[in-house]
Length: 605
Image (cartoon, rainbow, N blue to C red; front, side, top):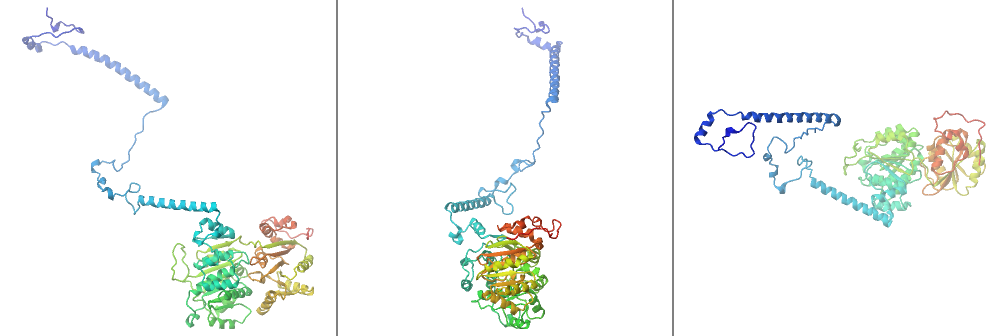
């Protein structure tokens, strides 16, 4: 029996359903017959599935909300990509940068092209070369340290920065400035002319002193210099030799150039120091044919004016007398471009500040060096060169240097304001009545040696000299108020050992070179520690030892603190009376001053 497709019941899915044969005529009548709503069955099944899916989605959203509440949001922030060479609205095929020939391509710097000639390849080559040189220098220094080669065993071209540093430490040389040439180790490296080297040898200078080692190379390069060195260190030759080199390069003096004034000028605070500098300059200029004239007080200004009109290359003068000659038209400074201020702080302390400024203002200012130290100086042009030398550096000297010097190099030998270690300093606390007996004892122990006894006033000098003369000592005096002839006679007699005791004021305390002074005695303590430094600097000169003795009283309490500090720095004995005194514990002005009391105890050793 054949079964028809209409025999199937709704929702009936026979397992073995087979297709039923339908004839052609029957098939043609099927579209006319009403169809069974088979889609309703499928719709019912689909609705059931939709309800189950909705419940799952709702449940999932609830769980997601719970997780977000307790664990936070897990959404990632949107990453914004910045526009770049290949991140734009252009198509990648529009980029033509790759069409450049590979052989002509240059790696750009920072991806922005070839800018201002900067090439990374050249930079890498330069960095590699610098690294190689640094490593070679380190290896050379390490080799020096390994074989222990001292700088004295090396040639000049073999000196390294480490060697120069050790050299400066050995001689106590320190600089302040820029573009500083290395110091000279000996006269053979000084670049001086054969004539000057011959004069140096004849003068007996075997080896240069530290100030000469440092200052002469600077002067040969026309640098302005401020030299701070202990007394007796050879400062005169340190500025005279570069000055003579400078003058030797200029044309010789003739009738026309003589009327324009000297080539170089040296200013000194005292007559004795000026005459001493003149003598030293003449000695070193022996083979150069350079004329030197001194202008100091105590001599006829008309005679000095006559010498100036005859022509000279170097003038050594005191500020006051030189200013008088300028005002009287005895001399002009139209071609003077080399200036030396020796003992500059002393000139200012003596009230010569205005005179010094007047002299410097009378010189031509067209040849002043440039303010910018980075600009190169023209080799063929003459610039003004200024030297300032002193044993101390005061604020007044700094102001003067700031006005008239250009980019100076400050050279300090040892410690500024400190006496040389060759001087043995002794201090005694005494009463006024105990000074003369103690002085007699010191002079009796002197033997055939010489001594300088310092007092603060002319009256004290004369009184003490008379007392010592009555006691049988060979005494001469040097003080202000005497004529120049009397001063020269006293110094000449003291140098020749006709007198072995010189009683003097501070006139003899600055710059005067008296050889072989064995003992300096401060019979009266000066009012400042700077003057004390210059007084005791009259001994212990030129590498020789000396002794400095100071008599202190309670009236000198204003210098107790500075004197105590100086004794400590020089490893000298500080007397217990000075160490315990209240004034030696604080700087003057930091505690209320009080006059000395009668019940203060003073001990004598």
